[in-house]
Amino acid sequence: MVNEGVADSDRLTEIVSLAKQRGITVETVSRDVLDARTPGHHQGVVLETGPYPYAAGDDLSDLAEGSAILLALDGISDPQNLGTLLRTAEATGVRLVVIPSDRAAHVTPAVVNASAGAVEHLHVTQEVNLARWLDRAKEAGFWVVGLDSEDAEPLFDTSVRPPIVVVVGSEGYGIRRLVRERCDLVVSLPMLGRIESLNAAVAGSIALYEVVRDAEDI
Image (tube, rainbow, N blue to C red; front, side, top):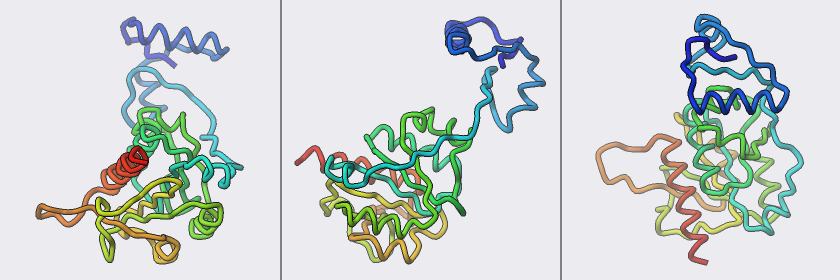
């Protein structure tokens, strides 16, 4: 659906052209119609789709043999944080992102928007029990590293090379006890100022890039 008040532009023309090539119906509608169809901000173009297709059946042993980086999110509830982490995951070459199937943010239009579309290029899977999934990852050959602020080793003093699962906890409570018990190592970021912690998405993004830096040193 395209807002009838949007001026012609190269980007809009390309969107409409690609939609028609794929047999997608294009409707010209009023701004009021688009506003009613979207819970947040839009830029004059709206696409109606089905639910996000979560990945299934990824072979953890194959991923471990390929020295993959995986990201496990333990209860991230804010769509903006989830979208930011997914964007960083795609930028750092993460092969699989694991999120809980309940008590956590799911991939929604708001998350897709916050990820700047990066989620479309990722394998994201849902797990009922994250702790048990980490057990399977360890059996397959992954090293599990949790990011937390208590009883943790400094991230920059530790080798965090793939194959690795980086675990980022929720915004308010961090990593849950059973998940933390599965971690081979818990690391923290240095806080040199007066605040005690960073936003979960910012901290997780820094950790992922540290993994990439360590991997390049191999």
